[in-house]
Image (cartoon, rainbow, N blue to C red):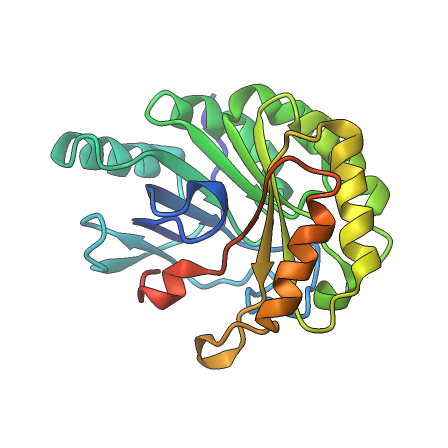
Length: 250
């Protein structure tokens, strides 16, 4: 039986610029489409007819448009070639988006084969908990968001985030929250309590919102105050901006 094909935006090699794997080289497989419309996000939510941009040489930005949908064999062949030509460079494969879990049927077929090449790292908005339960055995590391209303504009997601983290906690997981000057203390308290109720050892990343021009969109003292609040509940709380933008990486 043939493997399902996927609507992809990009496949490329770069350093991870956010979260706990910051600075490590990854293969990024970026899926199209998202089920949320966060205020700070510039990723298109709709799937379009545009081709997928596939990097030919890792990190060299020699992209070639590839017709969508993309076959698994194409991606496996590419990454296998990178592994042979640049051994030891890549830490893992980042399955990202958009929201990649929207393509859960594809991922159920793809992840076992991709995981035979490198560990699988899932970047997700952290609400599709039923789907995560179907895929969790094929994932090694999870970076999940908790979407707070002040920065995302999304409301009513707390129960979904809780259910998602309960499943994600079976693997190596950390939580990321985008914070800005408009963020309120109650949001940090509620998110921290949610995480601590599942496991206080789960790391929390407070990521300042990045404004146009690369400026960090939060008062530096306020960021430290949010860290202090979260540390009342959690063992490890870090403040990390989007470093790949500072380094002009993809």
